[in-house]
Amino acid sequence: MRNPLYCGRQNTTAARKVNLIKSIFGKTPRIAESAYISDAAVIIGDVEIGEESSVWPCAVIRGDDGPIRIGREVHIQDNSVVHCGNGGLEIGTKVNIGHGVVVHCRRIGNNVLIANNATILDDVEIGNFCMVAAGAVVPPRTKVPDYSFVVGVPAEIKPEIHGQRLEYLKEAGAHYTWKAKEYKKAGV
Ligand SMILES: CC(C)(COP(=O)(O)OP(=O)(O)OC[C@H]1O[C@@H](n2cnc3c(N)ncnc32)[C@H](O)[C@@H]1OP(=O)(O)O)[C@@H](O)C(=O)NCCC(=O)NCCS
Image 1: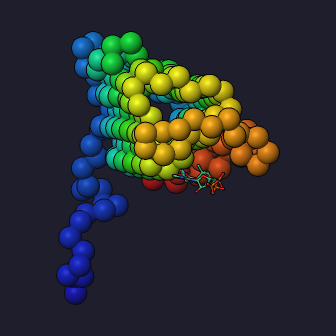
Image 2: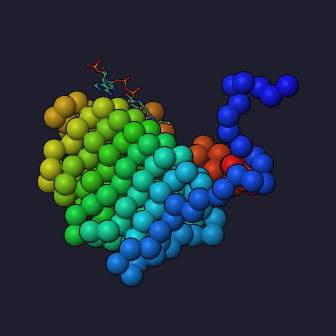
C-alpha cells in the first residue's frame, strides 16, 4: 500500500534535477573541481569558489553587483546568504560560515569563524583568526583587526583570540572539509 506520508519522488529517475548555478550579466560561477556544492545551493554570476570548499543546502551566493571570490576550504552552511556591493567581496582560506549567516561585506580573512545567524554588513573588513559569535551584528564599515573575538548587537570587538580559540581557528575548516568530501562521494 502507498505510504500516505510519502508525497515526493525522491531518488527516482523521474525526479527532476534542477541546476541552481546560473549566469548573469555575462558572468558564470567558476567552481573548483574538488569543491562540494549541494544541489539545493544557489550560486549566481561572478562567483569563484576554491578547492575543497563547500556550499550547503539553501545557501545563496549571488555575484550580480560585484565579484565574490571565495578561497580554499571555505564552508558556507545551510541558509546562509553571501552578497556584496560593487566593490566585491573576498573570503580567504579556512573560513567557516555557520547556518543562517548574512555576509554582505568587503573582506573576510583566513581562519575565521562566522557563527550561526551572525550578520556582517556593508563594507565590513574582518582580519585573520577572528571569531564572530552567534547572532552578532557587525555594523557597516567596521574594520575588525586580526585575532578579534566579535560579539553582540551591535558587535563589540575584543582582543581575545588565543589559547583554545586560536587552536580551534587553525583547524576551523577541517571537519567540514572532511564532511564535504563524504557528501560529494555519496552524491548527496
Ligand atoms: C563564538 C563561540 C564559538 C565562542 O565560544 P567560547 O569561546 O566557548 O566562548 P564562551 O562560551 O566561553 O563565552 C565567552 C563569553 O562570550 C559570551 N558569549 C559567547 N557567545 C556569545 C554570543 N553568541 N552572544 C553573546 N555573548 C556570547 C559568553 O556569555 C561569555 O561571556 P562572559 O565572559 O561575560 O561570561 C560561541 O559563542 C558561538 O557562537 N558558538 C556557535 C558556533 C557556531 O555557530 N558554529 C557554526 C555551526 S557548525
